Length: 402
Image (cartoon, helix red, strand yellow):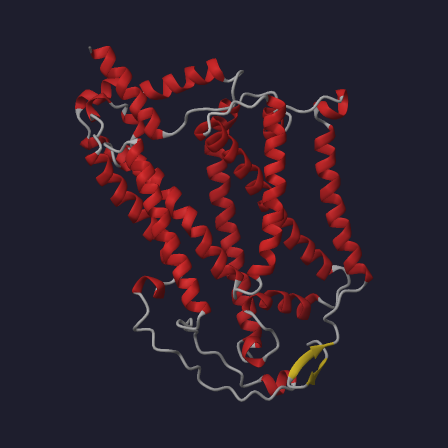
């Protein structure tokens, strides 16, 4: 039990502060991360010869391997590692939640006024349990920063590359030279980083970070998962249906997400919480809490989709993409499944495909691989979309039949 005193109805703990050791550990972790980045950066051709790295070297860690073999060789391994890692991470989070509940089950810190938001519950637990160990709070904060920065760096680089390939080279038909393309990716990453830093001041005024981040990420997650599911499970899907379905799914999930957040910010919806106890706050912390039952507003006049939990945003986006994409594909000219490579469809649906299609098994994948080998040295753009493979193989096979 940490020592503390009650001040003006709140709780002030004398151990809730960083000392010089915590700051030293935190700074050492940041310095170690920066030195790691500089080490791998100086292994590139730039530090050896003074020449700027190419776009492929910038994205593949100064490696000499081709992008297509690198991607193909890492797909299965990455999926396995991701599945195991996420399972372990979620299990640790659940176990941490159980430990925190066992610690504060008789005096809820939020109801007692010891914290102002649910996001402060874990830092409070860390400071009360290991805050007396010098350097551990700084190590905890450094771990949080490291996890956030690692995820942010991957997102920034991936988003910059998507903007370059899909918008600049794809939509605008601009062929940038290697040096200009590399500089463009770096500038876009810098701009996105500044924008992300600016959103910090907005996020801290929008309530819980977990609910808001999950509801926003569900917009892209539901749309992306819907497009991939459409390509794997709907044999007649084409690129037109995929694009229109993705737009519809993005708008529907975005409307549900932002509408729900607006209703919560306006006080029209208040999240229901499970009952908590404050019976031992006075005994454990010297706080006298006069807790009352929360009052919830009438939500009958709020649009039903806005009253849903943010966990439903992803299923809404997926169902919208599948429904709209399937209908649009039928209306705009569905693909003839007799001339389609069955490898482009999930094996679950192979029993429903016509027998003629199995004559062309592996055709689209071989074409994509050969095309990549021819164009890999000239461009870092690989046609991997299943809808493009479907349509290309369909046109090639129809022309060969004729």
